Amino acid sequence: MSEKKSKGQQLQKELSYKKQNYYELADKAEKKAIFDYAKGYMAFLDAAKTEREACDYAVKAAQEKGFTEYHFGDKLAAGDKKYFVNRGKSIVVFRVGTKNLEEDGIRVIASHIDAPRIDIKQNPLYEDSSMAFLKTHYYGGIKKYQWTAIPLALHGVVVKKNGEKLTVRVGDDPKDPVFYITDLLPHLGADQMSGRAGKIIDGEQLNVVVGGLPYADEDVSEKIKLNVLAVLNRAYGITEEDFLSAELSAVPAYNARDIGFDRALIGAYGHDDRVCAYPALTAVLENETEHTVLAMLVDKEEIGSEGTTGIQSKVYEDLMEEISIAMGANFRKVRFASKCLSSDVTAAYDPNFAGVYEKMNSAMLSCGTAMCKFTGARGKSGSNDANAEFIGEVRKMFAEGGVVWQTAELGKVDVGGGGTVAKFVAQLNIDTVDLGVPVISMHAPWEVVSKADLYSNYKAFLAFMK
Ligand code: MN
Ligand code: MN
Image (cartoon, rainbow, N blue to C red; front, side):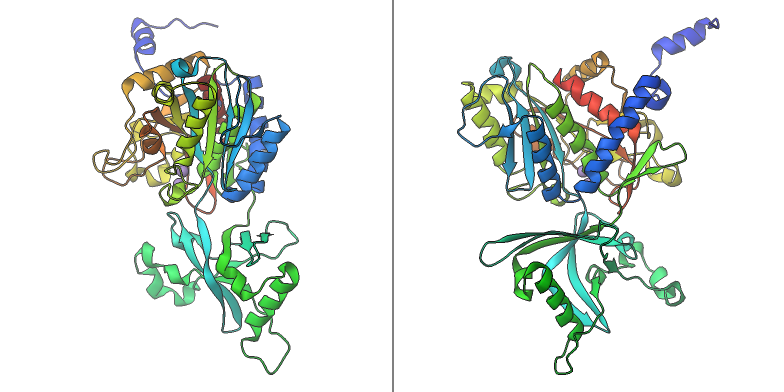
């Protein structure tokens, strides 16, 4: 049943740009693919709440797909499938392609696997008023009040004096106990609630409750603290001093769940940026290509991409140089010819907070993965600001790959802003643009994304690799 369009309607259709809802455009088979893909992603989210766990997951997934570990200096040949682990906290998976590396470069997808959370301090354990607590220092940009009065799990490692490394993961199994940061009852909260939101909970109030049972001995003081130490000693063989060289984090004890009667959305901890890391990982692991492709899953983005495992570390540049050398290519030529999708999440337009967004240029939920030409704040400051030429090239790839996508800007001009790893990759002389999934309630203990956008992101990577 074709309705005849007026000349104006026809012209409007031909000349105008309108972003569209991916669910609306998808046929039955595509919708099924969207929902099926989300299942694997949600299992990944539950398995990997820290960068270490995400790295371990990626190693296993890579091995299952026949990828083998790469070390600097190893020989490489076209067709090789490799993974490179950096200190157990970041991982790069790559395929060596058949195309000339100096002419074609490397197709890089950069994402991060750390997420905002509550880190435990190095001398954390104390007892006060019938409770034992761990002192903390939060990691990344959080609204501190959101992390109180929710169930928390403890994840991380303890490295003992003899070098032995213990893995800790308590609170995700329904049989496990969970942990907790207290908040004030509203009955006594008048003063608290009249203050500024940033001051509702102080950094030094984010103390995690870990015990309440006194050790049965009249002759000791701090009985509850001692009992917690005794429990830890029985479970892990550690003493209080071992906290000094531990890396423990309190993360939400929730697992990923469908949101909505129609299950269109996913609620979970740490979509930022695992909703890009998982598609990057699966795209490279599961799909052959003529290009040399490389997916980086890096650490420490949330605290400025610092350290040996953040993307500012020379290790990633070294790796690309080593690949070039192994393939007999000039690294300077290789990186000049390389292209990167810096894949990090962006803010989804939230009609409940319409005032901070500029609607025309905001990413809409379910309208596909979102390309951000520039991030930054106050006049694009600190932003990569990708070239129109490169965006045009990527646009063509997406059109050929049937990718439903949109553009994004992180909020109204001068309202706020943010940054990604894009500018650090671009510093290597690699054309880079930001592309990632729109997120609702970013950096909250439970964030929301659309399954359609997740799958669109995966399809975008496939188009980029093709
Ligand atoms: Mn991010
Ligand atoms: Mn973030």
